[in-house]
Structure formats: structure tokens, C-alpha cells
Image (cartoon, rainbow, N blue to C red):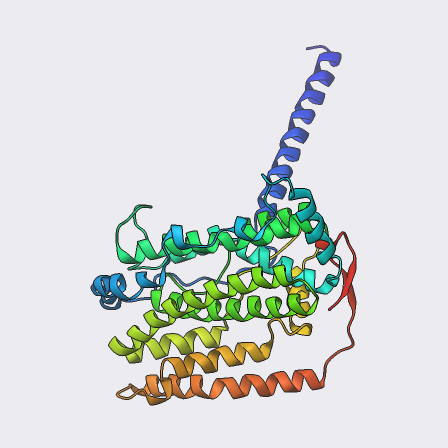
Length: 379
């Protein structure tokens, strides 16, 4: 081999090597783009023993008669188009203009909360996935005819309208950066969520009971504030979504109430376990490609506007303690009594911590929000 050929061969080998390194780095960066924006801690799986899984199989008929009744037939359900300008109408452009005129009067910080709520609703594929991780109640085929599977699919179908409606409203409003919002939705669905429910339907249904009440409160407050800002149509939109969440809350709390009847010890231990781990919000892995603390900023604005606060968290737990008559549970084991005491004492403890935090409240800072074209809001 001539010197020239040797040099050429070396250059070729190095170019191949560099190409391989570049490719590996590109693949690593691609993988990172689909990972949650922060660490997901060690996850426990399949924590429910077989005898408790059997409880859910024995409740099939009960769920058919007592849970599926909280669903509405599709033909009786509202649809997003009921609240939006009619594209087939000659007055469509005037209707859009009226919507945009009303939206002009709404402050930016309200839109931060409304967008955050919409993005949370749009991550519905994740929530159906989580329900289908739960042992004893998952949809084993994708079209299973068990009561639990029918509930999960129909609940998902009802919830799907929420994100659709808010998304279309925000698109028509002209107040927000839809591309940044769409990126945030894609990041969030790609990241998933970590509710710490361990494939355990006790934990899973406690979580959904809490969350449905939280979303009922949140959408109810955005409805009230939309009315205060002079947009009765947006108030109607948010209020209608809140009504759905209330109906779903009734179903999930009824499931947990039945578990307290059948297995009070196991259920109160599960509730205490969830509260010790703290109920994480469904969109806690929210990211827009720019702000590593996006969920914290969204939550801070929601807290400041009193759309969803730490007080609400305590109120929800107190409501559930009363709904499930936890203070009156009897026949518990020693561990069960400790769990009962912990849960019943927790709401006032949370309120005291919140009052202390408010007393030490830091001075508000401003951060740019990509959903608002980078405009700054106080957090």
C-alpha cells in the first residue's frame, strides 16, 4: 500500500469513527428528549396481594349496577362544538371576533392557569394507561367487557371532550402561543406520570378520587373568575367541565367507599400510604422545552389566583375523610388504627404548614412563560 493510500484509509477510518460517535450522541440526545424533565424515583410494582385482587373480581356485578350508572350515553353528552363558533355558519367570523374581544379583557396570569389546565386534560392517554396498569381492573384486551374496563374506556371518552374544548377555545382566542402549548402537550405525554400507585387499585382509586375532586375545584374556580373578567361563555365552558369532574368524583369515591365496607383495614392503610407519599398532580412532569420548572411556575400562579391552593389540598382530604367516615371505622388492626389517626389529623396539620408558609411568603418574582409568547407573569 502506498503512503497516499494509507493516509486515505486512515482518514476514511477516522471519518467512520466520528460518524459513529456523532450518531451515538444523536441517539442519546433523542432518548433524553423523551425522558421526564426530572428524576422519577424508584417505582414499586404489584404491591397488592392476590387475595385483595380477588375483591375487585368479586365486585364486577356491583360495579355494573353502581358505577356504570355515573356515565352518560354519548347522545346525551355535551360536545365541544356546543360551546364554540359554528364553522358552517355565515356568522362564524363574527362569532370568532366576539370570542376574541371577550378574551382581550382576561389577564395573562389567568391564561397561564387555563392553559395549564388544558394541557393537563390533554395528557389523557397517560391517565388511561395508568388505570390499565392496575391489577384486577385493567382492560386486558383493549375491548374487554368487564365492568371495570367499560368504565375506564367510557370515562376516558368523556374526559377527552375537556381538553378538546379548552384547546379549541384557546386557539380561537389568539392570546396564546399554540405551538409552544402543543410542544408542552407532546413532552408531557411522552414523559408520562408517576402517581406511585404501584399497580394497586386501592391506591389507584384513592388517587383518582382525590384528583377528580381537585379538578372539580380547579375548573369551578376558573369558571367563577372568567365570569368576573366578563366572559360568561368561558365561564360556561369551565363550569360544564367542572360538572363532569364532580360526577366522576362521585363514581371513584363510591368505589373506595365500597372498599372501606369490605376491607376497612387494607383501605385505610392504603389511604395513609398515599397521603404519606403525597398526591402528585397529573401534570407534575410538565415541560415546554425551555423551562425546567414549568409545573412549579404554573402551580404558583394557580396558588396566587386561588384557583387551586394548598388549602384546597387539605380541604379535599378532609372531605374524603368525612365521605368515607374514616373517624368512625372500627375493628382495625394496630397499624390500621395508626393509619386512621394519621389521616384524620393530617388536614389541620397541612393548614398550619400552609399558614406558616404564607407568613414567610417570599417576594414575588416574574418569569417568562412560553405559552404567552414569552411575556412575564408573577410567580
